[in-house]
Each structure stands twice: as structure tokens, then as C-alpha cells.
Length: 61
Image (cartoon, rainbow, N blue to C red; front, side, top):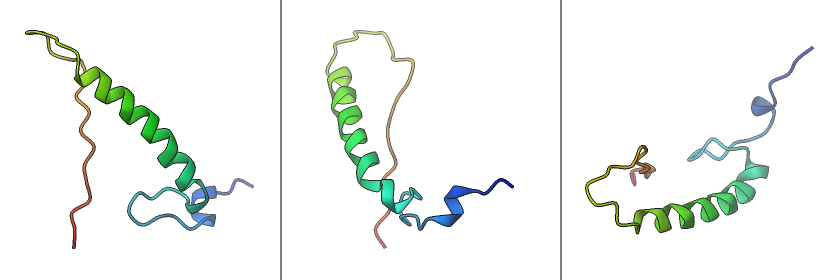
């Protein structure tokens, strides 16, 4: 019998990440975010990056 683990754990309503993993995921994203900022600082001239990363922010209510 296969169970879906995502339905067993409460999830953060903003990110839909399981609550017990939220801190771990946020810490990992901080590292990734710093590396992305380094890449954004590179002078590419007229070359365009293959990927444009712009995470969407949740609109305030």
C-alpha cells in the first residue's frame, strides 16, 4: 500500500512545504540565492542568460 507523505504532514500555507522541512528548505534557498546574486553581477555584454530566475513573492492581503 503506497501512501502520499505530503498529505500526512501539515504544510506551510505560503510555500506548501511540509512544516518539519521548512527551515531546512529556507536555509538551502539562502545559499542558492547568494549564488544567483553573484551570477547577476557578471557583465554579459549583449549575451542573454539561458535562464532568468525571478521568484514570485506572495501578495500581501
